[in-house]
Amino acid sequence: WFEGKVNGRAKRAWLWVVVTAHLALFRISPSRGSEVAKALLGEDFTGFLTTDRWSAYNWYDTFLRQLCWSHLTRDFQSFIDRGGEGGRLGALLMKERDRMFQWWRRVRDGTMPREEFELRMPKVERRVGRLLRDAVVCAEDKTAGTAAEILKLESAMWTFVHVEGLEPTNNFGERTIRHAVMYRKTSFGTQSPEGSRFVERILTVVTTLRLQKRNVLEYLTAAVGAHRRGLPVPSLLPVAEPSQLAVAA
Image (cartoon, rainbow, N blue to C red; front, top):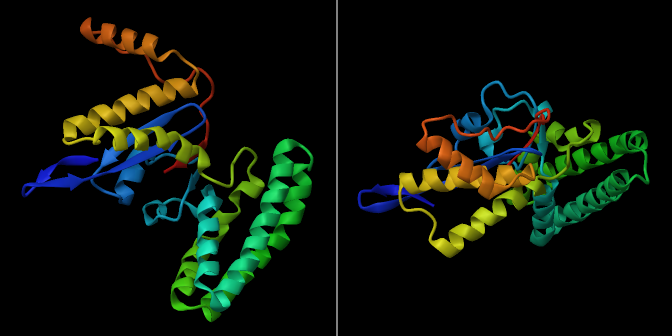
């Protein structure tokens, strides 16, 4: 994605998305900073937010945030790949991760009561915390640094344990943004601010309508007709109560 040119060179931009069960909001921005995340979510957002560890989200209340365990899995695998003491600790972290996901899948398919899951998880949480602290002290520099960064957000690793409906990953957000990524690869993306505004808006409209199982062509036809007559365009807001669970990517 590009937002025009600076000194004759294309100005690079990034695609953001915030998605709930019924709404998606895309933004193409030259910034990867927290001001974009704040603008997308709104200053008064108080729901639960699932993200990776990117620093742009660090302004948000840690106790209302869930770190994506797919990203944490990649962190632990990188510990293993670097070897040494960090690799040994990474393997142990992966075992705890596997245990947690095994239980989580049982909760999701109804073969383990959620109450039992919540009773089992504190031991896993303590072991993961201890292993990360050991990595800070004993592992090589890069692994130790990553472990220290994860520990700054330790409580956000486990929010999903106590909040029903909250997932331990932001895979939903990654799936939502995948079509946009493929579009960029096959269309050369955008070359101007005007192009970026069109793409982010059409992605927002089409994705939101699909989440709500509404007809895209019917909505776009009605929206264009309303605009030409000087009338308000149809709302994208769902009829149902809005979700207080959001995923950012």
